[in-house]
Length: 121
Image (cartoon, rainbow, N blue to C red):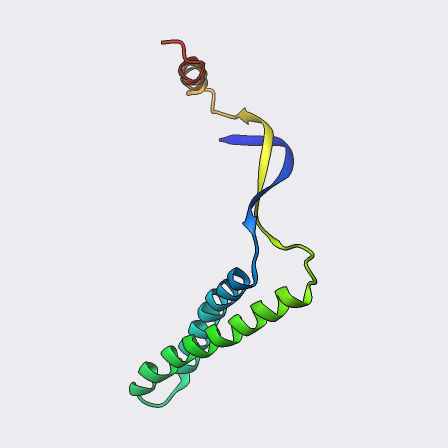
């Protein structure tokens, strides 16, 4: 098992967030939400033919409303936070915890991996 210590949040900027990108991102997330709502409604609908109507219409309505809210949300921000980014948690150090039976093998494996990463062959 590997344990990370001294965790920190690292944010990577992916690019500028334009109104078009905000609209597309809103449409994508809205489409997924609409598809979920359509699926849930189709579970309680009478008859199987309603599934073919509810799921696609949920997807379309969700995409439209998501696009509108994505565009409006970005427009109302007034230029603040107009970049797309990705966040991840990174550890400064990793500790390897192993059972006593495999500890020596784990140590040897780590030595081999460090040897390969240093470029020494």
